[in-house]
Length: 185
Ligand SMILES: *[C@@H]1O[C@H](CO)[C@@H](O)[C@H](O)[C@H]1NC(C)=O
Image 1 (cartoon, protein in one colour):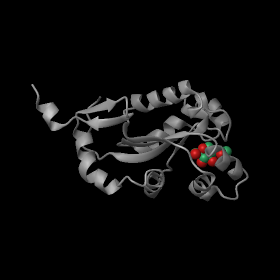
Image 2 (cartoon, protein in one colour; image 1 turned 30 degrees about the horizontal axis):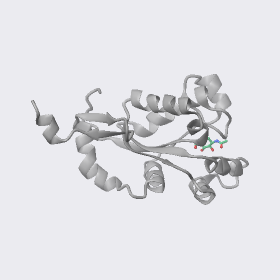
Image 3 (cartoon, helix red, strand yellow; image 1 turned 180 degrees about the vertical axis):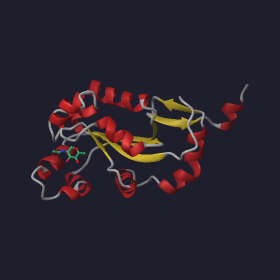
Image 4 (cartoon, helix red, strand yellow; image 1 turned 90 degrees about the horizontal axis):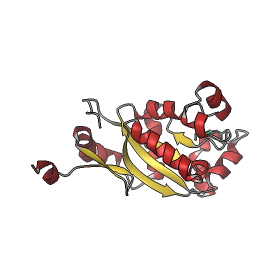
C-alpha cells in the first residue's frame, strides 16, 4: 500500500445496498473497488435495516415521491455497512459511486459504481455520506453506535496512518501490524 502522507484520515459511511448484496459478484466487485482505491476499511458488518430505522435514516427525504420506495428497498434485504478511512474519504467515495440517478450515471460516468452496477434509481447499489463534516459522523453513529470516532482518532488513526497496515480478508477490515510483529527481523 502506498505510504500515507501527513494529512489526517477522514471517515465516511459506505453502504452496499440490498441490490448489491443479492449478487455476490457485484458485492465482491464493489468491495475490490474500495480496496483498489486505497481506502482503509475501519469497520465492516453485515446488517439488515428494519423499516423504522430505514425511515429514520432517510428522514431528510420524507415527503419526496420516492421516499416510500427507498425506505422499503433499504429494508428489503441484507446490506454491508463500512466505515471507510482515506484523506479524502467523503468526496472520493462519492465520486467512485457516481451520480445517484442510475440512468444519468450510465450516460455520464459509465464506469462509476452506479453506472456499472446500478439497476434503477431506487436500487442504486451504494450509499455514501454527503459532503458535510456532520453528515459522515451522524451516519457512522447511526450504523455503528458502538464506534467512538473520538477514540478512533486518538488511538487508531495515527497508527493506521503510519502503518504498516494489512488487510484481514476474514474480517474484511484493515489492521495495524502489532509492534512485536514489526520488530521481528
Ligand atoms: C439513491 O441512493 C442515494 C444514497 O443512498 C439516495 O439518497 C437516493 O435517494 C437514492 N435514489 C432514489 C431515487 O431513491
